[in-house]
Picture 1 (tube, one colour):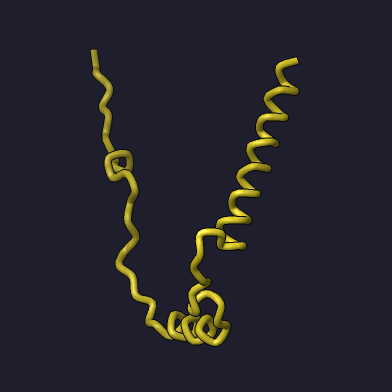
Picture 2: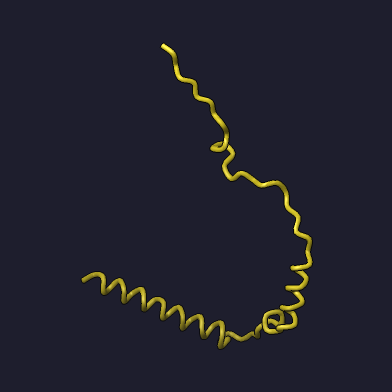
Length: 79
């Protein structure tokens, strides 16, 4: 019985968030305009060309957790 309340609440919150996003971002109820860097396709193409032209240089691979990569030698105790 509680599942229907949870599912309806989640769907309702998604609906409210979509409506808020639509009116604030797309309809621009608070004013403002879409920047030219977003709405201009020529700008996107030139930016993409610039990023593709950069030389790709990188350093050696990085070990994320160097402690776990160490080779520990565990010697068994001889009795």
